[in-house]
Length: 527
Image (cartoon, rainbow, N blue to C red; front, side, top):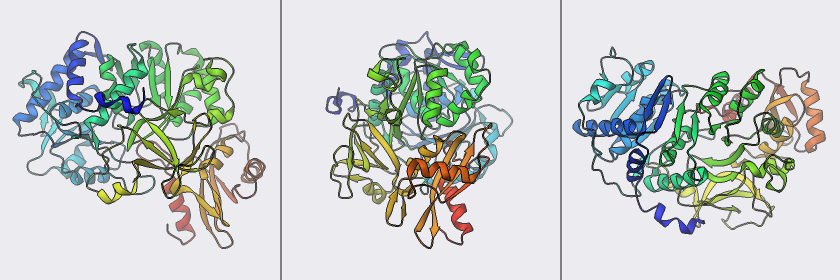
């Protein structure tokens, strides 16, 4: 099915889809958290109570609600309650700095906050008159306790009408290339994401492990998987041993982790002692994945790896590399596809159309590099209260991703670099992600970050920081020599630093901007 066939999926709100799921799968388990199992009927009733209790407090459709919490069943139910009240969910990442989260709550003028006791201090800093505050887990904070607050509310489905273009959520961009912006995701966006998710599960009842933060991809996966009757197993954080044990014990079929999370699993000395045979789709994304470690995952975890490309402005389904596409002739579990295929993030999905555009917005032929662009009904409504910024990422009906890449003759998409990370050295364009991939193929190099540094001769010189594998015995000169052999003199780093680890953004990505800023400031220059 192509994008043009999805009108029926974009002319409604997510609300009736949620209500139908709570009714259809009423007696089935919906959420597993610690030792608690909560059915669809219970989740439906409790989230309806949240919505109705919000109305009693003066909340109206279109108002904004935030959940400030680690992964937890009650936190997800509170999120559903905000949405079922016609509210706009503002995801608050607990891994952000407290000052940043206070600023976010203020920026979006949040009307209600649900929080865990561990985050009371920043909530205290934000709270002003007229804001409702509910603690999810502690009766001694001075605020209403969730269980008591919701107890007397009606469990009937609230009568709420929202338009397809009304906002459902305003997540923030990662902020790796500048200050985070609020992205307006509407009900129509989530309806088509729900359709694509349901198509992915292909009528089976998945068991989904939610280990990645539910303020990010994990929460969107859960919202869109309810209509499939999925059972969601929620972990508070990504602990490798707990993840492996949970996959085995709960017979998990589907999960998502960024590459760093997958590397942590592969580094567990007892990985082979766990039964992971229930897995069908182990999705990876949000950052480039080392080809060697991907091959290792395919060998040791199974032929279940599923690559993909999405961004906050266009979630989850820009491109997908299916498990079978990791193998020659799409024979699942057969001979591995060439490295070039494994570097791909896949092909367009049922809800996306892809193109590579030049600076004038014209489409480029296969093999030529330009900016990756996408069309589809999951493309966001734009940036919140920033029409000028929205205009910068839209051209000729296309959404500009800010990534440089190319499409091959078969339609596979390859990401070369973030547009803002391109290095111009001696008049040549060097794509940092391309060099990073080459560095990570050097035996002993686990992770690499490549960026430009000021240089009197070249304007910018290619520099790299690398993290070595535990057993590796490489010097900085060894890495530079190997890199020059792999990518040539122009692209090879002129300076290499070996580091213990890298700074990361609150969503777990390597923070290249912070690394580059630190190095540039040391030279007396600022970006």
